[in-house]
Amino acid sequence: MSIDDFYNNEKPLVMHIDLNSAFATIEQQSRPLLRGRPVAVINRRTEHTSIVAASYEAKAFGVGVGMKLAEASRLVPGLVAVESDPTKYRYVYRKLMAILNSYSPNVVMKSIDEGMIDFHGMPSLRPLVDIGHEIKKRLREEVGCAMRCNVGIGPSRFLAKTAAGLHKPDGLDVIDSSNLRSVYETMKLTDITGIAGQMQKRLNAVGIFTPLQFLDTDMVSLQKIVFKSIDGRHWYQRLRGYEVDNRQFDTKTIGRQYVLESRNLSHYEIKTRLHHLCESVGSRLRSQNLIARGVHVHVRTIDRKYWHIGRMFQMPFYSDATINILAQRLFLGAPDNVQEIGIRVYGLSNVENQQPSLFFDEMTREQHLVSAIDSINQRYGDRTVHCASTLTNNEFIKTKIPFGSTRYL
Image (tube, rainbow, N blue to C red):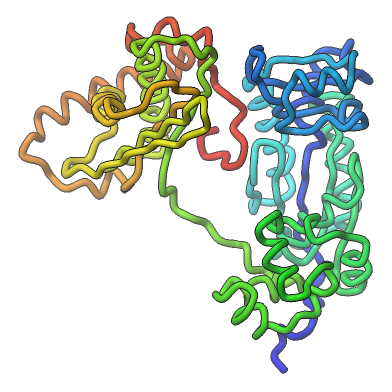
């Protein structure tokens, strides 16, 4: 037997903090009249818009993320729809990050509304449960009285996140080797982070229907039969509280997509919206100090067909103008009846790794121009300077909530 066959008996020193219904709660915090009322956050007001966040008052009626606003309004006649305001959410993100950083230098913001503190190596610690309650108190005092969060504590990132999801809203739970089995006994497979539809089917196919059955499956079966990769070993260790998720991944692609606000747009209007997306992707690319060599464009049509094309290029690029030129060339072959457009760049590498070019002087001039525009936009606000052909798009294409990675914050 290896040590991994046992549960991790290490003292739980990882804390996961998750804001409750963050974007809806932030709207309730900033607008007191919304408190206690069912609120849905949407990205824009159209008949086809979907809900990106719902308050707990709305969730009580069955309103969920991804639901169409029209359907949610039928469920909750008094539902208040609020357009998203990323500036507010970024403000709360920075306040939360400042609070967490005051406890440890080892803080990782997992998304705009959740973060993780690793207390390993910290001297003379107070009980983490006390720190968790203090963070809750500070969130209410330093951000707003309507703000609540869940806190989870465990010996690994996975178990800390699992603990944070046990008693929403405003819960605080600890998972360690002593209560690991009893916690899994209260959960469903899909309550486990990372287990959704297809993964659930894969587990069900080999007779795993509950978290406890998942926990009790031997490592060889998980690695050789279920996952058919080293992921099986990782899951075996992860479920037992061993740290396997302390990994960072390089950025592989940077992109953005947009569902057209109307089905009656001209081809020119669609191209200007694609140009707008190219400017957004270019800004994100440069913010990470990266250059690209590949462009990929995709389209979804009204009849749900998917068209895409991508191409790698010999010379690297990073400017909005170049990304737009390449994307528009690829877009020439797109079908009609477009409902959604998307652009992403790939083949990424650091600017410092760029090889000298025969066109060094020309690239240097472009770099200076792009850098000057970025500086203005960073100082005075996004899209202070941008291409005139995308001017009318500001009304439609807005900065959305940055789910997932916080790299662009």
